[in-house]
Length: 625
Image 1 (cartoon, helix red, strand yellow):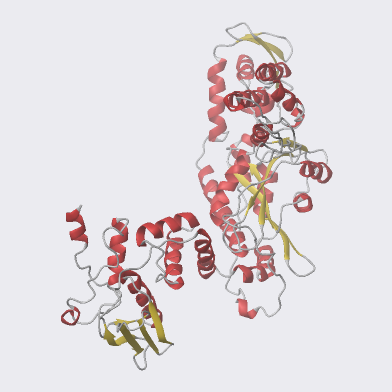
Image 2: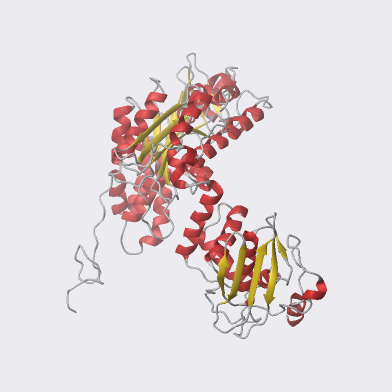
């Protein structure tokens, strides 16, 4: 370790972007480290600190502009462990001294005439203050320096978290920063890189007009409140609407996520699933807050953009108001509860001794009950739950199984029990949640452009009648059908017996099997495959059209057109304020990314483990013992 430190303490070459004075003038200067080996927390920190020591190399050192001078002085002071005080700091000259009274260290640099170049013209490198004895919090690390570091890290990784940046800066530079500091500087750096959050709202009308102009058939609706503050924005590109209506199953997944902007904003999404089980975004909205009114408005806009009489199944959390809006706006449609959200509710509400030991088994039986294709299979699953926890059994019966159990659900959900597609959409969008509002819209557009183009090109190489994923599933059913025996029937109804003697009834004309897998999945189950092969029918004629390669290609047949920004007005050119940002976010720490929160279950009251009373816990219990 000692040998490693000695090697690291060797002089580091001057950075190429700095023009230094002759080596003879700089020999022996500024060789003091900012921290002792005990203060250095990593080899990476030591290297970085050593590099910053060479930001100032001596008299006659030259810089490209005044900003480089200021940046070099701040970094150099961090490396050497002292603070500087600017005596002169303008576009023509920079004069700084050590902030400790009586210390003679000082530098004067000025601009070379007729150029933007700066040169150090006077320098006293002697310290009498004991430079290098800074505190752990490093007050010498000015806001400008740390903002520069944060900006560099954001540029390298736009998805980095404030806590991660704080930890990295602590490890690399020994600078301790609060979470709130880093987050504010991240917002400032993001604005510098991506543009102003506030000005982006006033550019929304122009962007909406351009989207509709370049992509005819796109549905866009922008609303503001009476004071011109942003209220909500709906966008559904023509390519997405056409693709959903032409090639996707009538199935939509609704979800919401919080945007990490400095202003209050949430993202509502509606996504479909293509014939190859891939996510297909249909519409999205940015709203100031998630509430019943905004969800209803979103569905109204979606209905206007999708003028179809075909019933649609919506998969989402069992939010009461959302379910009411679905039934009002989309008549004859269905609201399927997401089982993952339902399981989370059950975990929250189920209490009792040793519940943590059995909750996993209960949730497993809950999923089995949801996937159970028949009523008898469903009853068997929930009876297993009752034998474990009667409380959980009662809870499940009150959770409206008609909205989440296959054996009861009347709509077509194609065996999608959870909103996994919406979760995929959520993951797809995570990286853009901290951008200004116009950047969010444009980034979604770019992602959709790339998605549509890539899948369109991929599907041109397919040679099968069904999409690859469904073709694989059908081949598995064909393999299972080899062990089944078909009982001949003069009609189109057949009995199919497996090796255990169990019998299922298949109706070819109705695309129906008593196991209900054919109806639930949209392609023949093993029993139907056995019958179709027995009577020499083409299996592919009995698969849902949504699984065909032709339907997949129709889904991605339209493209999203580019939106030119050559004539985009600069912020200073927008003299009229048309849209103001929504209120500032007043949440300390990192904003939560929770999506739809269930409201259909009454909150469980507090129980005291001491007196067994309700409404309080043992900490606030007033009963004397």
